[in-house]
Length: 239
Image (cartoon, rainbow, N blue to C red):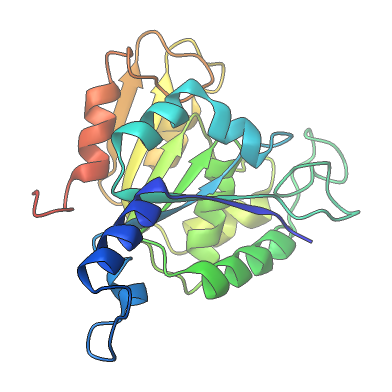
């Protein structure tokens, strides 16, 4: 069974607070459960290939975001466990190796169906976050599903260029009408992916750290404030 990690200390605090106000009784006109989610912004988070929900959640930069953005609730999804894919990957390498582009347009269908199930059970989600291979999977999912996200947060990612079939499904509907943040680090070997991703999103916000490697920016990174600002933009009355 797929594992999902849910992080929301803010939810628990708000639920207790509201229960105190209502005397723990609630009413049909003002149910506690509904009010507990008011003002929250759920983010579906996809880890990198060969990584795990715990690995992404444990990154210092992810910990900093969770601490500084209590109004956001992060769901860390685990890549499907399937014989056709490598361990903890969102889709398998091309059958002929990375030197032979894979033309199969349905190569990520297992993960697309899995994410559809998560959205149905745990959504709706305000945004989707991808790290490393989670970025091409995020982009494939946006292009191939009926799920709408207000924002996409893409860290240290790239396009699935070795999978021409998946790339075709993206390019056919590009530019993707999602407010996207594309982050890259100058010391990351995947820095080339910033330009790739920017080419398929509608007017993305691009943030480059001069010190970051293949990881989310932590609170001491020069770009961290800009990343926080993008998360908060359009929430709680901000422009």
